[in-house]
Length: 94
Image 1 (cartoon, one colour):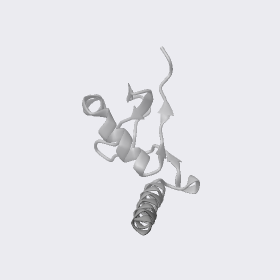
Image 2 (image 1 turned 120 degrees about the horizontal axis):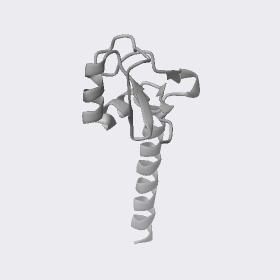
Image 3 (image 1 turned 30 degrees about the vertical axis):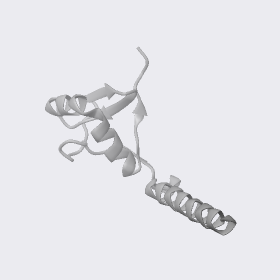
């Protein structure tokens, strides 16, 4: 019985450490972080006049039409950009 408990403990620790390693590797390294330069909707160059403040972040877009897309599903765009190492500006407090 002790052997079984020990084996299960070793398996759980191995699985948890593997999951933590995978999650850590999914994050970009500090030297891979950069500011936003492209529209998350159309992939074109951003125009600093157009942006959406959502979920505490400011997301720049290329044109007014992309603002609605970002506001419709902000998490989709925030998660995609952060996965690429893009550091989003904080939206100003109102």
